[in-house]
Image 1 (cartoon, rainbow, N blue to C red):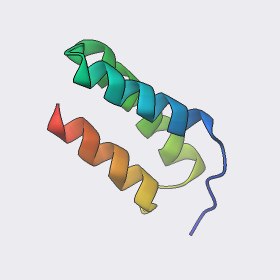
Image 2 (tube, one colour; image 1 turned 90 degrees about the horizontal axis):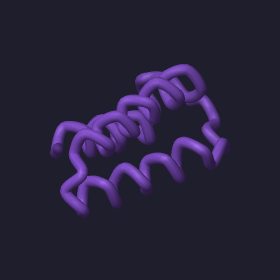
Image 3 (cartoon, rainbow, N blue to C red; image 1 turned 30 degrees about the vertical axis):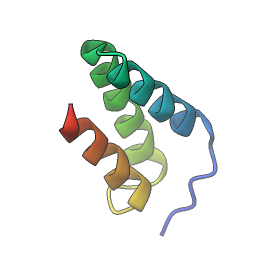
Image 4 (spheres, rainbow, N blue to C red; image 1 turned 60 degrees about the horizontal axis):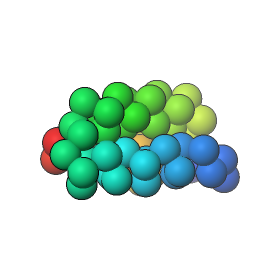
Length: 60
């Protein structure tokens, strides 16, 4: 399994959750999509972190 040590997607994921909680769904969705792209490229689709963000996007 790939190692994902970059904090940028984690910070963006948390910011997306904040947007979601504030009802800013468009901003949250955009950030989640960006995070998924980063995680897919750096970690791979099979990484648990990718699945975590994909699930958060599904909730919107």
